[in-house]
Length: 407
Image 1 (cartoon, rainbow, N blue to C red):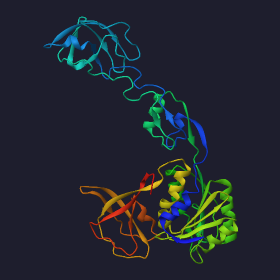
Image 2 (cartoon, one colour; image 1 turned 30 degrees about the vertical axis):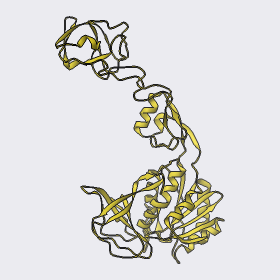
Image 3 (cartoon, rainbow, N blue to C red; image 1 turned 135 degrees about the vertical axis):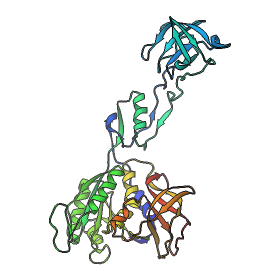
Image 4 (cartoon, one colour; image 1 turned 60 degrees about the vertical axis):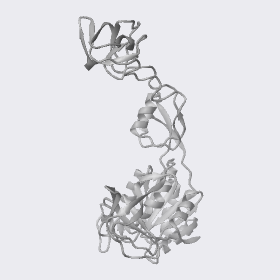
């Protein structure tokens, strides 16, 4: 088992053991937020024909050479869905509505607001050149082009493009099931009575919410006391039900002593213990039968921070995303941070756009147990071991809502 390793090595050890879960075919309307499990190529041109992008009159551009106004005969109309059957010949036009196919003989469209129609004739006040105001066949999508690759998240725009191709069902990756276990003699479930020295299990709710945002499905496990045998049974129960198990707490006697012994009792192989980060140092990772167990600190903010950098990438990769590393960005610090540490410090921050670029604003409290400090936090600013941070200094931040393919 490796001890006290870098964040990058911890991510590598976790992610090299993970592959996307199986796929399933769903109706298109059920797939928002899911991840495509196959390549999608266009089978149709979009638009499927030359069409008018506006209401107006389809004309021959050659008929509008000269000074306006010019009067043309109106020989018909083409509502959307009802193409004009006939040909626009010299001196004629047809009334055309948005989306309707351009009729034979026409090579331009005049905007309706530039015209005046009376008694079967249209007076055109503003001329157009041949080719004007036409949406050409295939200018949006060409048949045969690759629209999406596996790993693409299905957004409303993706849904629209898939629907434009007549796709009613599509294979997507199944949501990975992530078992969440909490360990601690002091913990009680929400809704129960608190006794002296007891607290509610908030970690389950924060981690479950994060797992859902990452594309996973949380599976709640029963609370465990700080006993290795009991926690080992809870871990095995989670492995039976889910694709990955995450625990918080279990450190009542020495950091992660209980969880480490619980892993061994569960028959798992420990991979690493402790990561050179603060907060969130006491991270434990083990493996059993191809599934990972990730043990996090019981301190609420520390658990969320470790989860963002280690559990988040794992869940997103299981869910089929190809972008699963928190995105790094250069930002300016709005305040100083003068406490040095022997390991990398992660400072909670709200990163927002500023005239000079991105600005990182820090909450007043940075203690690992202060959950309120995570409100509004959308980034973690990295301060290297032995370093401090001055106001206005350029620094690196992990953006917690944005993802990239490489760390």
